[in-house]
Length: 314
Ligand SMILES: [Zn+2]
Image 1: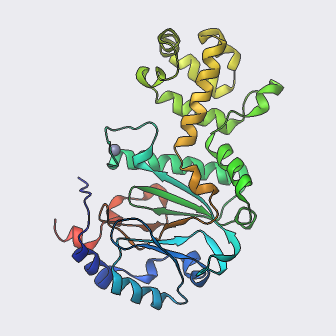
Image 2 (image 1 turned 135 degrees about the vertical axis):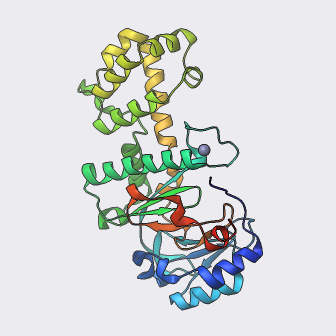
């Protein structure tokens, strides 16, 4: 069983003195280290030390050993002068999927807690998004990392690195099925990405969750005919659901599904071109796990992220 608890200041010191290794920083960060802004949370009060710049990995190593911070972050953006956050050059397109914030959970975790089941669900959503990015948009320069309570996906293809905020907003909505596509007006059915995510989300909804937006009568009908509704969403045959649940409840249902779809990802992270994200290789002290770069997301196991000071105590 996964035991997630806070690391003590002493454990942080041991981790940065004996275990942290600059070779665990992914190449795409290592090669642009001096162009990135670093941020630190010294003691768990929040990432309030920002505008830090390191010209070499050794400098960063010294700093980490000396301060043993609670959390370490680096920017998705590259700057001419990171220490002033000036001369923005470009920024990765980042997706942040936090198991603690999933809109529908496969477990009973509350209050910032995560477990193997919700982490696995976060991983599955991440893989679906990755697939949409590569098969629908041709974006293949993708890098995964485990962030402690969830996962990050960073996309480095040149065209997206230069995108501004409003383009990123549209992109994240498309990729997550987070808005009802406007192509319904052409009576051609919804885009495939939206249909697939909406169907997946609908499949996971129970009476109670549906009751948040629909009348009890509509909920009853939709649950009774769940398989038919699912098929209709998947195939974009919206008229069929209208016959089942009525026009008004269909609109409410689709709006609800779009909202839930969008909530699987923290959209604020994706659109923020100056965001800082946890540095792969660093310690997530809130859960005593290592943030690590993931080579093969399908085979990823949490065991890889357990720091020595935790495994040796078992
Ligand atoms: Zn959980």
